[in-house]
Length: 355
Ligand code: DNO
Image (cartoon, rainbow, N blue to C red; front, side, top):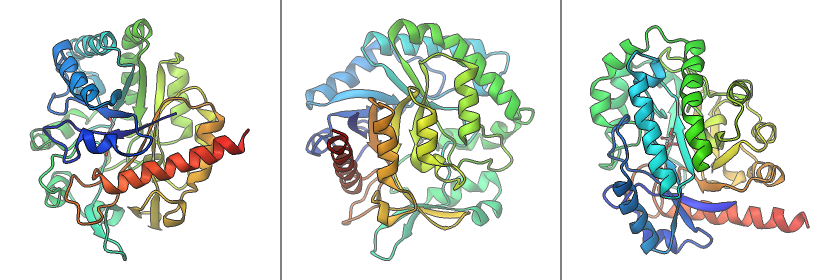
């Protein structure tokens, strides 16, 4: 495996490449052209510029998170082919620039969803949190305003204001789309992009829906073992793979995370590893990475990755806000650096123990 950190680009991130470079064992970043609207082509020049900047710091681009999918593709509207053509062009440009991992999601309307961006914990740290009752009390269009307040000035990925301004139109677009239709549209998209992925060795890594159930009545399909295995079989090509996000699949306590990793052997191209602390099945907060601070056994998760021969990038995921840092919620430097170090420690112990 390769230890990485997500980096949003110098224009948007409070964390610098130089800081990331000083975290022991972190050799690459997972990055993106954050201001590119879904559907636009990423040009070679833009990708080159990003790559040059990252490489000048001594790091490499280990993958892209995300090249977002235009809603026309998810809904399957008549103009989807043009957007898929653009996506293919972006993939080709990434391939030509020697980038071989793309994380994306197929979530309707909302990307990840939280109800609090800064829930205070007993030690004074703050974390992202989710409470189902709070969601049930909201209209979808209130969701964005209810959480936007405490983002520390950052634009949260997936919650871009231009997009959220159109939320009612977005809901209308998905009116006729149920889970089966979403599977069908995902299949159509994957079948069209697989030839270019094969040509350039690009691994597509779908991110699960977070939380792993339907919100506001929208269909959500990348939520459990059954559905993800269905997707792997539906387009049975090794380039059709998974971002195994422990924190997202883990929102549903019925998901057995190590078992899911084992059943996805060979198809996990990217891993997000973090922990959650549950107060009840519908109320959880993002804890420190350490097993003892949350609900998941991080050792078992890392062991399953190790034993299935996982060789892709891994990144600590959302961290707590600690030590007075002001940053994008979940994406500060300090707690993610602690997370990377802890995960590296687990990996070293598992690896040496296996000899
Ligand atoms: C949130 C992230 C998601 C993720 C996308 C992948 O912090 O985990 O926004 O990057 O769903 O496409």
